[in-house]
Image (cartoon, rainbow, N blue to C red; front, top):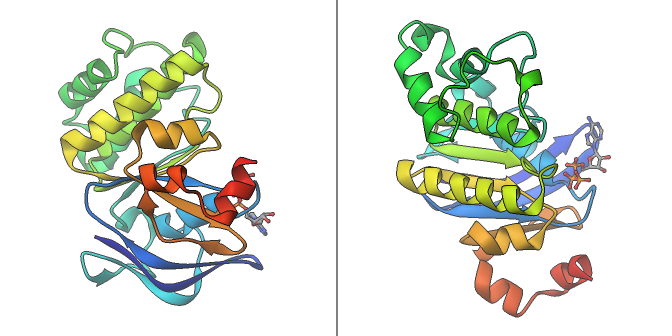
Length: 228
Ligand SMILES: Nc1ncnc2c1ncn2[C@@H]1O[C@H](COP(=O)(O)OP(=O)(O)OP(=O)(O)O)[C@@H](O)[C@H]1O
């Protein structure tokens, strides 16, 4: 279980409070107004932004001071973070880390097939569509085999049908592996499509997760303001 215990996150002067836990295997959407601190929240969990107060624990262990690669997290950004000079297979294989990379050919092929990119391993990212690039990034996350997936508007640039397909794939992969998910999205429909719970980030607070259905059925004032 991930716990944010009386946390005050300090992103170079921007402060965000959080005090809640994320139950194992839950899919959680992070929504709220632009500039509210959604990315800051994910970056603090990933270890890129420090805490001014409180601590973050994973399975009871304090990870507040741990380096990003020593945390149980895999992070997927909007641009997918692909290296243009590396092939699809090499980009995905980065998820295995240096120690496993030499033994990973079969695992990479399997992950690429899993995201619908069988036979694309030798291509460069420039020779892929936007949706295919998103799949490569997802394959890399899959290969990292981390217990906590952090997605920051990963499919914002995709059209509605493709985006729905990718969301469903993320949800399926998380359920299969038992991973927990924190996913930033600007579209409440994304949250309603796959999230068990929703964290609303507004007014300097990342509010405790609430069940998606009841939350949208009777939105609190901060969510109503965001939804318009
Ligand atoms: N490196 C930084 N230094 C100082 N302030 C920052 C830095 N990065 C972000 N901020 C500020 O922190 C606040 C929260 O930004 P953040 O990107 O977390 O919001 P967000 O909710 O993800 O926004 P959006 O939906 O627009 O992506 C903003 O006011 C932003 O200007």
